[in-house]
Image (cartoon, rainbow, N blue to C red; front, top):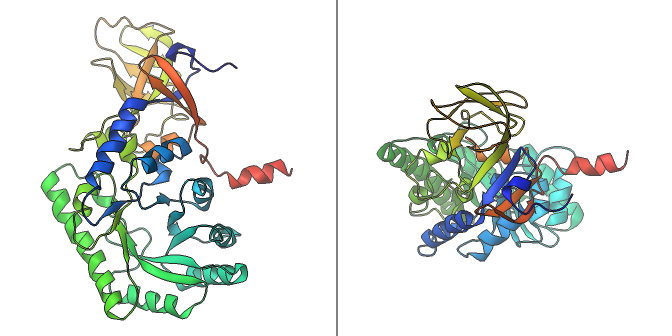
Length: 368
């Protein structure tokens, strides 16, 4: 198939990204971190797209990239020498793959257990490399992470005793605070969470151990956590594309991507149906928002269909295009193979979402 020239040439459902808006988001975030001791480590999992990561790094203010999985880290290895996998590395072959990456790159992982730490140590020793470690703390998200304080100190001491691993610091993600709409409340609770993170870093340093990295933050709290004394880097990701959930906050970033669909049915005056259901957009943060059609609302998402309620007098017809603003960036992007990079109605380029899904399984399929 020839490369699409305009929006009308794009087969739907598809993700489109407004390059100018994307660049403005990148520049706004880079400018915020251009001054002060804290730096940006953009989260690759938000877009999984090397071309976007290249633009983030080129804008400056970045100390490297954050990844969620080993396969994402492998994907960005050609873009930066400093990679944080902000996750526990457990499972067949994963520590070995991290060790292989560490042969040529500065790789750091999150740990919150002796079992995970010792597995990484063994793989690193076998490969003759050293892997950086951040002690993962639970600062309120109640997902992974140790309780701040003495539990973290005990694991930090264990890191110091092992070969193949090097203690770099601590990390904690205040993800539960990102969506708080009321700014003062979001700020108060974020500062409390980051205070626990920084206090643990100081506890570890007071024990004579290194703790140079204090990593946390997200799109909803970047300008709060990023100005807490002692926090050294912020892992924000969604800012570069945005979604309807983050769009409801007081953030200076634009909606830069949309789900493009085609109207396939107009069964009655009050609704139409488009071909962009929840196989192309997740709804864990709510249904997508219809852009460019005042009064239109997504009523439901089914496998292949988005049913859209229409205002009185709507002239939308079968074959027309609709733009939906997804409610959650990361899992929606993971459903697609490419972004169509656009300027107005013109398609400038097609960017592979190279790290979507679980790329390590593609090698397994190729051997079948």
